[in-house]
Length: 124
Image (tube, rainbow, N blue to C red):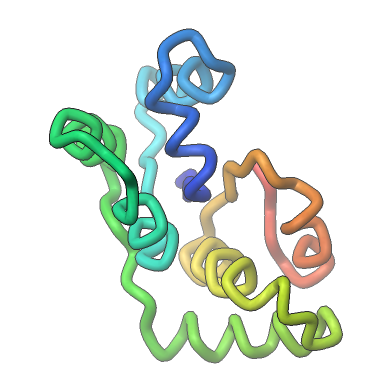
């Protein structure tokens, strides 16, 4: 399963981008695609058209993954593991969702997520 970061979904909606091509490839291969609830919130803050929301929803074949107790515990562990840097708070939540669901994270911001790879995060 592939979990999309907010920026990956945004660029994935733009025709002829590398992200759109990769998303189309995953969909053609039957790879489930999802997004963490926190990233979905960021995406929905827009601005967006109704058509963009409809297209994004269609891409997310595995839906929006809720932020539960399991994700909260894992994100706290990740946040503490990266020296409690405030810049990683939301990224830790997204990374934790990918880890707890066994997903690979597709992001354009590899530098923001690389510190979590030592703790079980796989980047797509």
